[in-house]
Image 1 (tube, rainbow, N blue to C red):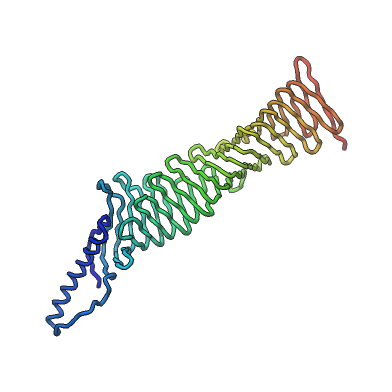
Image 2: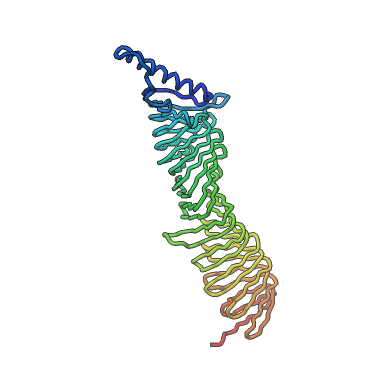
Amino acid sequence: MKIQTNHLLNTKLLPIPLLIFMTLLLGMSGCNQKNQTQQNIPEQPVPSQKPESDLTLNDVTLEQASEEGKMLWRVKSKQARYVKDNQIIRVTNPEGELFQDGKVAYKITALTGEVYQDGKKIILIDNIEVNDIQNKIVIRGKQLEWLTDQGIIIVRNNITGSSEQVQASAQTAKVISQEKRIEFYGQVVAMFKEPVIKIQTEELLWEVDQEKFVSNQPLKIEELKEKKVVGTGFSDESEFDLDTKIATMKKNVQLFRTEPLVHINSDLVTWNLSQDIVDSPGPIKVLEQEEKIILIAEKGQGNFNKNTFVLSGNVVGIGEENQAQLNTNELIWYFDNQTFEAEGNVVYRQLDPPFNVRGPRAVGQLKNQTVTIQGGSSSVVTEIIPQQ
């Protein structure tokens, strides 16, 4: 039996009243059919043509409010069918709204779905679209589970999320409305604009209000210019600030640059991608790969716009090819010509030919084994020309 009408089904009611409401509709329609039958044929038992679960209503609105009367959620459907055995209402082309403080916070659409009779869970299927109205974020997928009491929306299968600055994809997305947080799980890829940044990981939390992306899983960050990767970072934990474009990378941090060709190791690095500055407040190791120069210090900061790296605290510079070593308190390294300026307790030594010199300041080039030690009114210049 099919009934076409406009109805408001309030899922805040207990299951029994809802069933009584449906049954009354069936009973009223059944009485009309019985009166018509008695006028045409002898009276006899008339079996039900369809079970009670075939009750169908058009243009249905389902909604639920809190005990204080505040609206929690609402679902509108072109057609709804109540299934008694499963105690669900199957909806067609549903349009849902999730409220916060009496205002619509999220709008949800799908092709089909199921609303559980207690109103605590809604399942939507195919062409899922979740719109965060305030933050202009859209999440799409193929399946959605909506836990209405908790204000949690879980979207699965071919997930994409987008805003003005971010494009993301994953296997699963979880929207926690009260905390204004979106969690992405499984093969997560996030692309950011200006500068162009790509993040890959298995779990990524989007703190929407704070404009931060946090991951406690191994993560890869790539900086792209003209569609080419110019910087790549790896770490076990990371946080990216969308406003400042600063990535804070922790534990087993490795950072690779292409121009200049540099490899950086540390346990804590802040990477300012908009200014091309890398800062490590803890122990750091820098490998200048083309000339095979190793720099080690207690902390350091690299400015790749200026092609310099400033290191301080027990600085050690090693030229691998010629076995030259420089020790100092502070060091400025210039990538353009592999020269340096050293300040404080400078000690320079080399193995072939054996040579040692020390002083308060020094400038030079480890590659060519040229070092000028400066101190007081005099200076010592050492220049060793390698054998051909």
